[in-house]
Length: 483
Image (tube, rainbow, N blue to C red; front, side, top):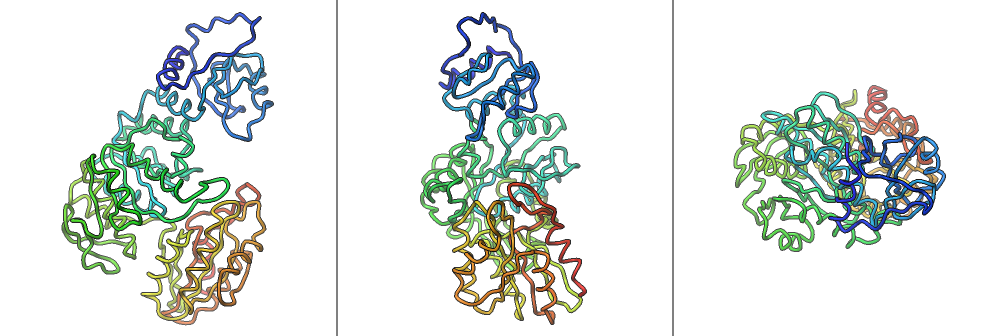
């Protein structure tokens, strides 16, 4: 519940209030008006809802439909003149976030909040932290792969970082469920469109940075992308930063005056004697660690999560146990064919993560390696050239290009664009299941491998803006393991 006087005070304190607009001939006494619901979906309103008009595609008829259902007030950046008062603001996203905080009782103040950002590794690091903290605490987790607000029920989120109204509602539910900590993935988009405006994190972790999410509907430039990633550092009480990341000096100077831990090269917290399934650490987490996720980048994610969890009350024993127990759906999942060949399913969806995936697999699998890869439509167009650059560095790799969330683009055209950046012939099989089946049929011995990249654990394809039926890479690979 929130009173209109509270709403106006919040907006004025944020210097975001402009006016309340209404018909001059319409006498309205709004003193004491109370809202018991917040919404940005015109299909989900009641007379006591405070409605937020957001999005470039919003149409006046959406608002009129809500008014017809009894809506009494709305917040917007302009007056749509639909016969009810409009609370006018300069920035609707800022208004949504701060009002949602207050409406849901400021749940962020009752949770220790750990946030991960980075071009890659956010989900894996979040899983490490969740498995560490759950041993002695009661964490909730908001993750691309799985979200849980009670530690029992897990579900997939639509966005890496939920819209602010949804985010604070979920936080409040976590508090009601007795959760003590919240682990979040925070995307650059979350700061760009102000989903976390006004929120301060107890610990913010910066894993890495490389060009990605650059395009017409995302970030216009790498500088803009990097800037919005770095905002997490400015909005965290303490930070953990990978000293081996590109452009580290900029972040190092940015965080110099706040509590921080660096890990990786030229820091006290380093990985030593890294092997496939175990490694040693120096510094604050000094000791021996077992790990199920192969690859030095996964060991780095574990180290980052361990340092952050230590700041939030985890013991060294919990950190060791949590890292050893962590598995992540769709992240380096390994299946074995009847002939002994390995099948790797991984979410690698940009050039940098693909390079790391291929480096790990080819280190262990020295026979024929077959890569199945696509690129999403209508986003991250720069990835297509990046994939070509990476594939060209692996001349012995056999490549099958296929569909991966083509959305409103032609998947054949996407594959052909990727192929144009590759310096040797590749095969295009648009149907993803057919591509997987063919690749598995071409392996012969235990040293061979099929690498299925991009979708991870996603059991759907995005086609024409909607989720289309798709069993998922793991399920399909399992179907053909013994063919």
